[in-house]
Length: 309
Image (tube, rainbow, N blue to C red; front, side, top):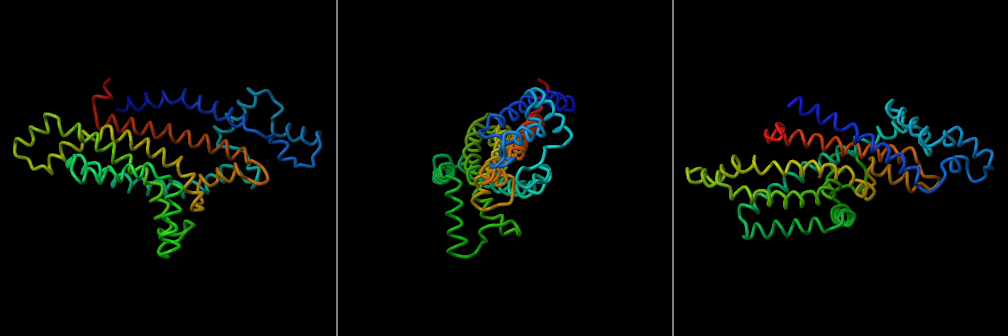
């Protein structure tokens, strides 16, 4: 198992390098001149050239990339053009709210989605299946921002049960986590149903029933483990989706997380905060890569045949 993990870690090096190159080029292709934005609208060409020299933008592209990589490896993502604070501090102050929102959304979405999917598979083509899949299609189809505003209108404005914005207490997590996890729960329900339907028709399931094992025990012991192999992969992908998809939800609920920081950096009235944008895009990319690594390890742990291939 250790050799498998080490091989997967070594295989990440080319991927990380490609991601770093793409993120670097992505920010350089964005419209606008950072030097002109920092210098201000009244600055003349000489001042702009001086700022460009201070930022290293007058250097060849490969020199800029090498400087960028060496700084990133040292944990230096530059200084925010808006707040004048180190980008690492800006991200650190916003990371935990996004992480906790993602975790709470993932927990309820996985538990609820898998329960719906298992029930739909066990009672296939009956009312639990029809109701569950109708809810799943509705959850996938309904836009997150619309669901967020609807929940806010009902539970915050009309009923006054829950707060609208902020992240100060556990009550602030309810509406954003419901909004963020709705699509994931729907995907998990459909995927779990599909996986369980295939497993329920296997020979070992029929053998267990023929031995007189109760249907509940057959489903939980023999079906769940084998059906979880493709579901774990989907769980990892959906966790990455939650981290990236939190951008819209954080904007709707004014959540003090990474998503809102990215939106504010792009939509800043004064200037686009290029260092923050670059750091966040790189961070989201690295999160997806690491999540895929964890999924591969879990997949190998559940199915030992994978790590021996």
